Structure formats: C-alpha cells, structure tokens
Amino acid sequence: MNIIEIENVSKTFERVKIEEGLINSFKSLFKREKVKVTALSDVSFKVKEGKIIGLIGANGAGKSTLMKAMVGLIKPTSGTILVNGFNPHDKKKDFLKSIGVVLGQKNQLWWDLSPYETFLLHKEIYELSDTEFKKNVDELAKNLGVLEILKSPVRNLSLGERMKCELIASILHSPKILFLDEPTIGLDFLAQKNIRNFLKNYCKERNTTVVITSHYFPDIYELCEELIILKNGEVV
Image (spheres, rainbow, N blue to C red):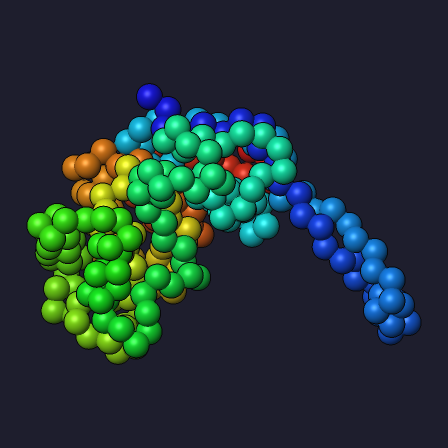
C-alpha cells in the first residue's frame, strides 16, 4: 500500500530581482522587478507504508520545500500530493493526527515550560486519554533516556535533550507517518547515535513510515531503506 503519492508536483516562488550597484539598488526602491524561482519541478514518487525514505540533495535542491508541501505548510503550484489519503494543504483533523513532524530549526517546546507541560498541551490537541498519554510518555521518555529531565525548564536542557523531547512531542500521538527535517543537526556524535537507534526500533515495532532529510551520512546510511535524490528541484 502506498501511503504517500506525489505526482507531477511543481512549486515556484516570486522574488524581487536584485541588481548589483548603488544606482540599480536605488532604482529598485521605486520599481521592483520580480522573477520566478522554481523550487520543485515535476516531482513524482510513491512511498509504501512502513518504509524509511531519505530525501537527499545539495543545499537548495528542494528537500525542505518538498517536505513542507507534504505536511501542508506550503501549497504546490501544480501537481497532486496525497499523504495517508489526504491532501495535506486541506489540513483536515484526521490528517494532522496521522503525521508527526520534526523540523531541525523549528521548536515545539516552550522555552520557559518543561517538556512535560508541552506534552500536556499535545495531549489536548490530539485528544489522548489519560491512560494513553501516560503510557506513551513513560515509554518514549524511558527509551530515549530523558525521564529525569521531563519537568525541568527547556532553557536548562542540552541541545541533545531538547531534540529528544522534540521527538517525543512529535510522536506522542502515535502517528502513522513521521517527517524529519535535519533531526540531528548540531548534535554530538553520541546524541545522534541514540536518536538513530531509537528511530530504528520505534519504526520497526510500529510500522511507522518515515521521510527524512539530513546532511549527515550516518543518518541516511543507518536509517533509510530507499533514497529519493533531488537536484535543482527535480528527482534524479
């Protein structure tokens, strides 16, 4: 069964053309010329349920744009995206409950709250029962080795501890599909390895589908079963 289907997806953005030189910069204050930038061009692929897929490519290849389109953060200019049978851009409740998202540069945790308090917010958002919430928090925190820091303010945690708690927040509701954009960025070797080991075991036990982007070769080599290579917005 294909849980993700991407067909002929393209995405273009408009940006102001910047000319070199002081005179041209002054002119642009009064007359701005816009140019189209193609981030994705006719991208098509399918992902089977339970697979761990790596999106790889150089900076600017379109990885993050494609990831954002798959989770509904941006709408493609053309083409169709189906994730678990849903159009992500519709942001239907059942779709949002079926996915988990970790963006390396975006935080779900509140700086002055503890991770546990953020988890309580997610409990209400995803309508988890008290029993399910406690079971999932205890199990995930134990497996990631963060039980003792769950009630400490996020500002007091190390980067590795924060990322582990970000991961818990993203899978607390047991999503069918997990999207990971640079999940180990900035982490030390040991923290990276701990997260990779956790993900391998977690996804195998629950048949979770994962789409991951990373510049760290071990993330791709150790986790991914298949690769989708992007270059200049196209699948190669």
